[in-house]
Image (cartoon, rainbow, N blue to C red):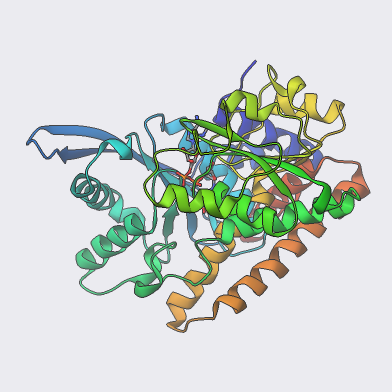
Length: 415
Ligand code: NAD
């Protein structure tokens, strides 16, 4: 059985609802998104053809504050995926206790098949279509798979031009020159590093003895590999959508990042490494596995062949619920997505705060606040897991879902 992202999110919520003994009405309220919009996004290609693409913005929950979540440009993006990602954002923001609800957006498109001008046109038209539902007090998009800080700059500019004045706080993950936060670029990956080190400490595993594999050498996976390397781990394998690179002696993530930034299409084929497939990477004899690409890559079918003792979900939803059960039976520890990759939204929150205050913090200040926030969130999850005999995922969901349910109870239901 391979659960879709939406099915996985529903199963995880049902487990948390049971643990929290939520009444059926509250469970039902949390199951469904508050708002989902599907938009047609016409794009004039450089050769004059018009293509109509499909875009989405889903606001899962707004009870604890404005909705917050990334924007994905990927050919497989659909409403179910976006709904699941929006729900995970709700629990994540509540877990790290920042005053946001959860949202996600995206367009079903391969951004690598577009020219820069086409990408800008697509971004601006998509923002125009979702404009009525976004804004610094309503819903604040950020980067995700296939989008970057340039795309955030176009989103912020489009919203600002339509508003008649500069609105910095409408998106996060912007370039620093237009109100982005120092430290946002590496924030998700730093959070992955901090939570990995916390988990290793609890398991009494020395980072210097760790062999690590990272699937997805993108914005998150690339820097996660570098930061884990900096912490003393040996990164033996990395991959992207075109394949992977393996070296038993260890890779140099900084050199690989330079290689990618110099325009190389993939990490596969990097000199001095052996080629491996993405499937082989997941099953390598490593201590720590960091899936940092897409959801649903570790399933009931391949979970039995995953040999890592610790799996850190840098991506959203990479381990399905039935794979979770297989990994738990084997005694593996899964550091769940809503905890492991929360560093990105945490620094997005810092960016929003800085934008609203028009007062900017140093990179050291951002990184230090992030470290404190992530270590506190990890400690809360680990202590609940230990007290109640839960997995880290179940404990993280119980805390996140519990805080949102509590906010609903406190605010009451408007007739
Ligand atoms: P990205 O587009 O920068 O990188 C994605 C990477 O995954 C690329 O290297 C791509 O080649 C690779 N990839 C794509 N399809 C693949 C496949 N089928 N097999 C193997 N590799 C594949 O995206 P990102 O921002 O680094 O996001 C990666 C994951 O982290 C996503 O699940 C995203 O939701 C999650 N995440 C991102 C952020 C953020 O701040 N960007 C925050 C939290 C969570």
